[in-house]
Each structure stands twice: as structure tokens, then as C-alpha cells.
Length: 56
Image (cartoon, rainbow, N blue to C red):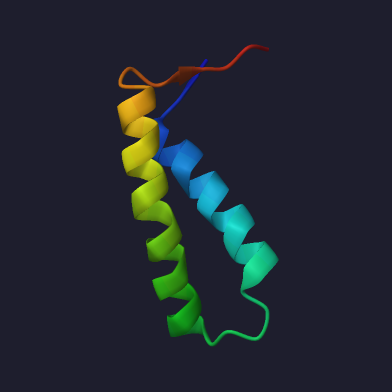
């Protein structure tokens, strides 16, 4: 099973947001999510150009 780089980056960004977004307003939390997501996705795309295969 393959998990897309986008899904992996989303999962990481959500985990970071949950850990660090206490008390943020919704729009502020959205902006923080995007600020986490884009650099993570760029890094994952660089490291795993063909995606990441899950080992089940």
C-alpha cells in the first residue's frame, strides 16, 4: 500500500498543529497548518520522489 507524499505531509502537519495550536483561532490555525505543510511536503518530495511504501 502506498501513502502519497501529500497524505504523509498532511498527517505530520496535523500532528504538529495539534501539539502546538492550543488557543489559536480557526484562521490562525489554518495559516499555521499551511506553514507546517508546505515545507514538510517539499522535503518529503525531495527525499521520496516516488512516494513511501507502507510495510504492513
